[in-house]
Length: 247
Image (cartoon, rainbow, N blue to C red; front, side, top):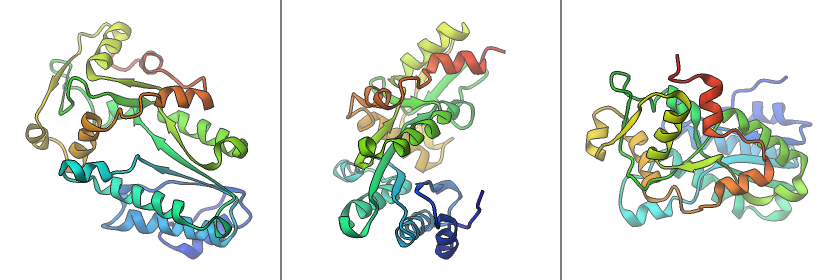
């Protein structure tokens, strides 16, 4: 086990020396302004310097589409897109032998942290449209899928995108699953973006807006994920396992 400060590139170099692969993750919410981009850049350049063979990083679909619709860009989306584009532009003779871009969905665990229902009436009240489909999965499956990518670089290490999505569901489909498993009469009440800003951070609202306008542009995300890891946990299985809203 090694430890390093990802704000310090030299420490990253020491930590990565001798490693075959790196799965690089940054945290927008814990970084200072511009810090997430700098952290990720440190991870990329440190891994290149010590000749890491397989670099895996987390990203999202290109956010250029946001600009065409003229609403605020989520800052961490900009960071992740810029970094993915930076890696893709690197000359093949001076970068990693294998590269994989992970596009992770919306964690089931978000339902018990920031995306919780109002407990008084058991209602979800968020700015999601009726047709907005959310790509969801159990965050604990992330490492299992990343491991498969490391173990099979000949298949998953050629700069392709690997989605991590178990299901793509509307809020009504999510509520229906919860009702069927927990027998709780949970409902969904859609809010406007302005109404949501009373409760939520603007960055969070803009992230949710993604699911209304762009989150389901690839209808095969779950299918592609199951090609890599067929045992990915469904939402119903997670609700049943965790006993969420059932106690």
